[in-house]
Amino acid sequence: MTNNEYRAVEAVSRSDLWYLSKTPLHYKAHMEEPEEESTPALIFGSAQHKMVLEPDEFDKEYAVLPSGIDRRTKDGKEKFAKFIEKAAGRTIITEEQYLQILEMLAALKRNPVACELLRGEHEASFFWKDQETGIMCKIRPDVITSYDGKPYLVDYKTTDSCADGHFEASCRRYGYKLQAGMYTEGMFQTMLQEYGFAFIAQEKTAPYAVRVYICDQDFINEGHDLFRTYMGTLKYCYETGDWYGYEGPDHLPSVLGGEDSD
Image 1 (cartoon, helix red, strand yellow):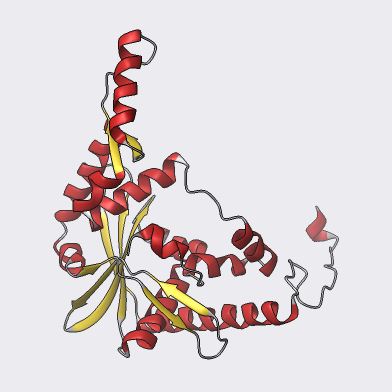
Image 2: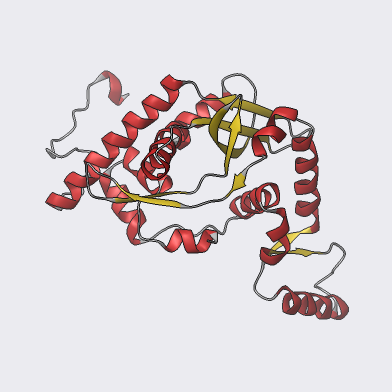
């Protein structure tokens, strides 16, 4: 199953569910009008992800625009037109971006623990009906592997920094704890097996440092608690039609204190 086919399946993903960390109103807006993944940063991140996890499929989805094509000249315009025709609908990245992707891949391969964790089944899709809510869910682990004699799910992330505390802050900001909880729950529901969870984080600027994070059981349990909380909220919203915002399900006004208003 391709990523586009996976995304088309009507089931709740981790990225969908994370919108509930704001409010159900934000979740509903996201589901009705999903954001387009077309910014330069998102395109680069997707291309890097593809090169790491599915290198044999990279050329089928991405076309590299050679440097030196000056589209201000007649010759350059002709070369660009031929390139677009040959690209045949693939996503275009620059030669500079492509070289950076290769440098990041080389740095990643120099980390022995990351290399070990990346050995396994890549980009498999799983679907299940949550027993407590009846809502269909889906997950797509980057890697299913084993580490230290135990089954593991592994997720590859790019980050601004792997220095102490920085990736931990990203976990809170982007819902990575929820991911660990939801993904291990999904694998237990579909495969009847308990998995550990690990992140491979890599900086997006030279020297493209890599750091591996093994999630302890408390991290996964807290993520599972978040998953159950958000699924309960989603069930309430579906049953009542009340997609409330920041005011909460009771729709109570907020209070501004004098000191907080400065």
